[in-house]
Length: 148
Ligand code: FES
Image (cartoon, rainbow, N blue to C red; front, side, top):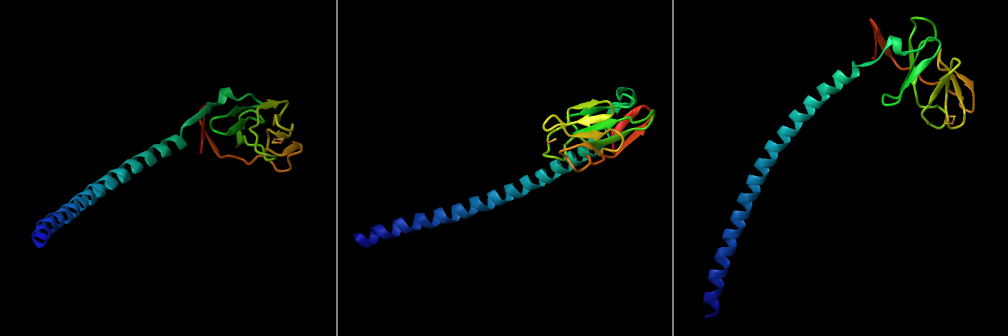
């Protein structure tokens, strides 16, 4: 009696193993399809990054002569030191990384510890910062200023 009950019990367990392997194989096939979809969607998002790099930041008429304008979202300050000459600098203060917030009398000012930077070349006019604001590349085309 005892030996008869062992055989029926072991047979179904083998079927379960085969079924599990079959399901795993199916899952692998589905995953392979899923990863192909991922790579195609990421390549399409990188093409939109390229478009964003060339987007217009401002009109030349937005930038006051002898001063400038801060573009917080882009992290840049665009200045016009002399008529028709445009420059751009990082808006991140080189002292402790605060965002600069003001431009008055030809200087870009940081609110945190009152460092001042020249609108002409980003150089330090007043500490505690000791390094100039890094220059950012821009292109001026007609009356549009874009980040290069
Ligand atoms: S972080 Fe700008 S002056 Fe200190």
